[in-house]
Amino acid sequence: MECKPLPLDLRAFCLRLRDEMRSSANHSGSIEVTAQHLAGEAAADESLLRHIFTNLLSNALKYSDPGGTVEFSVVRRERDAIFEVQDRGIGIPEEDLDELFQTFRRGGNVGERPGTGLGLVIVKRCVELHGGAIGVRNREGGGTTVTVRLPLFTTRPGSRKKVRGTRSQNQRNKKKKSRRSATAKRTRS
Image (cartoon, rainbow, N blue to C red; front, side):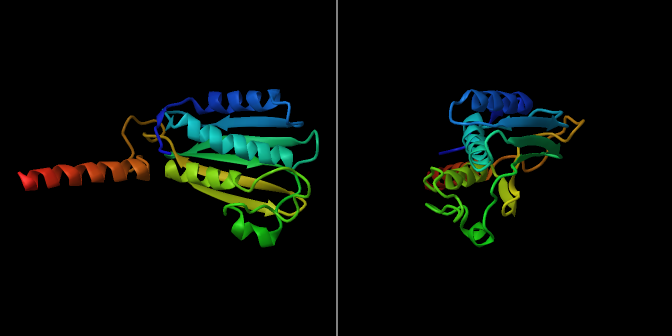
């Protein structure tokens, strides 16, 4: 898997995803979308974003009471897009938080709800490919908030000047490898 960012309207993406989740027969409940301060051009790999937020929204709906509301928000802070998925569901037991992003791990309180324990592992990998970070705030029995911070904006708000370091780690590694390869070819000649 690699990150291939292209220009993307984040507000439209969030609304489209909400509508797709709404039409899914697997979910009862609603998703409330808030998108604020998104001026400027964002560049993201829509396929990776889709993996991230389909999983997080699915989980939020799955672990909430039927008919509950999940809040899905995105706001811009400098070059970062800060996404939050917040539910008022069963929460995650404190003792399970450290292992949340490990393969085949699930919360001890999930009961008979279906799942494999792979979804959050994939989510974390997709976030890392974008050069971002993911965090969880939790109240067992009182809901969960998952925050995803992704460096998706190439300019500062109100500026056309590029922000340094907006490439993902994956892109930086490719560029270094390309330079080393070119240097090695010149050295051999």
